[in-house]
Image (cartoon, rainbow, N blue to C red; front, side, top):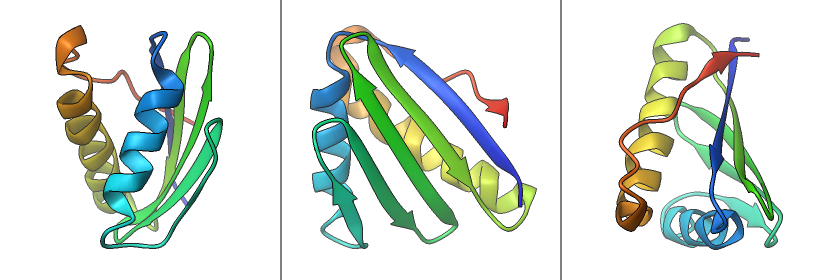
Length: 95
């Protein structure tokens, strides 16, 4: 099962984690606190970990095509919530 991780350095990591999880909870199963969350996205699950210095994402899927979709969903939604920080993309690495 392919996996990827990304780290976004920001002092608003906890805020973004909660925003993302609340947003996704309208349509999918989500479990979260201020410091960690898990979203059961259709292409594959996304885990989030927030601290004082940022937010880390760990995503996985059955294949590379689905993994790319999960990465796109996380990146596009975070970019919307972090628009004041002018986030354009996340740098994903294979896990």
